[in-house]
Amino acid sequence: MQGINEIILFTIAAGACIPLGGYIASHSHIQRHWLAQEFRHAIIALGAGILLGAVAMVLVPEALRHLDYSIWATALLLGGGLLFYGLECYLDIHRHAAPQFTGMLLDFIPESLALGGLAAAGTDTTLLLAVLIGMQNLPEGFNAYQELCGASYQRKKVLWMMLALTPLGPLFGVTGYYFLGDLPAVLGAILLIASGGILYLIFQDIAPQVPLRKHRSPPLAAVIGFTLAMLGTLFTH
Image 1 (cartoon, rainbow, N blue to C red):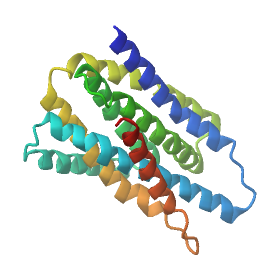
Image 2 (cartoon, rainbow, N blue to C red):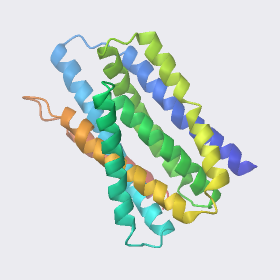
Image 3 (cartoon, rainbow, N blue to C red):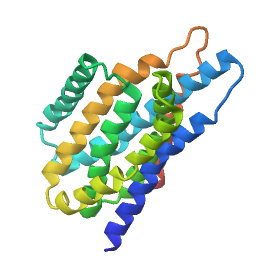
Image 4 (tube, rainbow, N blue to C red):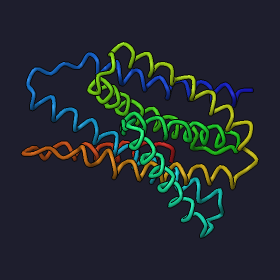
């Protein structure tokens, strides 16, 4: 029972970072346009760095361990990228393209599922993954809020929408806890598919938004984000 309580607590905390990021964005008013632009691009880069760090430091290593370093792991990683590519094509055709919001939702669900599975399997990286999910949800929530408001969504409606996403964490976390703990191959597959999808989103939608003419500092935030992810890993050792 202690394990399930921890999963619920971890996933609620990680999910709450989504509306928190949106709330911060709603109260971040920078007068100078160039400074506001540079700050936004830096936040995008920070989220990309944390996502990349989560993939490199936690998701892929854990997945390979659960799959006994099978050669089929490469197919699952590529399959994840292709799956997210197909989803983006579908959303684009139906004019629902919102890459920051879509990316946030598509990686939060499988990560919560994997978090529950890792906890049930007795993995010692559960807390680290929860922290990384929260760390990436914060800048993703910030960027998704600005993206949706820029697409003419009402500000209060966007915040309520983000708040409604919070229960998805415990829902999928508990599902993963009960159904994936004894299925290491399935857990590893989910981790790799999520990793492939995240990598696709980083280089397709997030990273291209980072460069800013005559300002070279925002991409440094990606390095900082990756460093934060690595720091979390170092703390566990």
